[in-house]
Length: 357
Image (tube, rainbow, N blue to C red; front, side, top):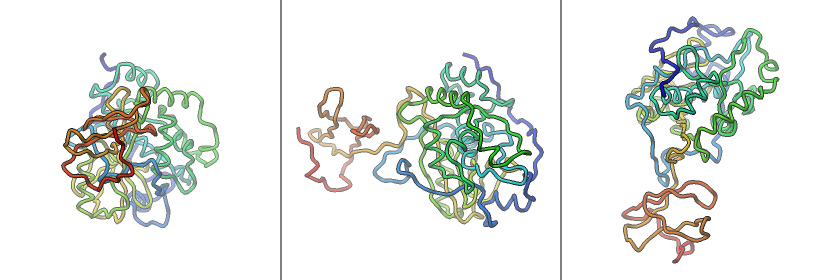
């Protein structure tokens, strides 16, 4: 099916660059750079139990490459996605950056022909695109429903919420009249909540919006941290955090990072060497009926010996069945797991936990 929405290669920003309503340029740049400017612009950190952390040796990592160049500037938002006005701040940078990362991914998938006809029609007919062919989500809905406070919110709490409510199309807001009560007080429109639920029906029902942590409070000047970010970019843009702020990184090469901010000017570039502490989380979209390769599956080891097997409970037959290497299956609690053949077990077998034929 031909796509209805065309992508503008280099759209001019309809908004002039400059500081937000309430901050001078020096303050604004300090905030966006993550410097210790004496205030928090809406992020705090917590790792929920459901979070997946990269580098765990007992997990298997499989990723779908989107762009080998790792440069998503063509698909990232066209400003603004503001979070301040009328002399005050809405502290919703975590929700804005979460929406922007997955909107960028979905914009790329749409224009690359990776979405089903029905999903494309749903997005086209329900106002998910801006005039430049980019998908834009309702970050106000996500900020409210995830319980954003006057201290901000956390990456995991926001992402856990979006897995329940989905993404709705962007709603404009008049920031010149902003008050906390005016922005967060009204209930989210039923239409938006319904569109969010419909959005989820096009994704994998088990975990259509997974994410993993890449960096947890690393030094921005660390070469290993910079390499980790650069390597991760081929799988999609990153949700990035400093001690005070969260943004979308749509390009990262060595120490150079390009990112989309929720403060003007919207598109920025900076040197990671100048940021003492950084966090990075990779967010994904897994389509319905796509092979469930995410979240990165915890695996059980088996030796090459054909007489050695890993057995798992099959609820359909109410029996224990042998699982071959490389096969994915559901564990008893409903999560995905996988079997991996290894030349040597990473730890001794606990005889108390052996399952015999």
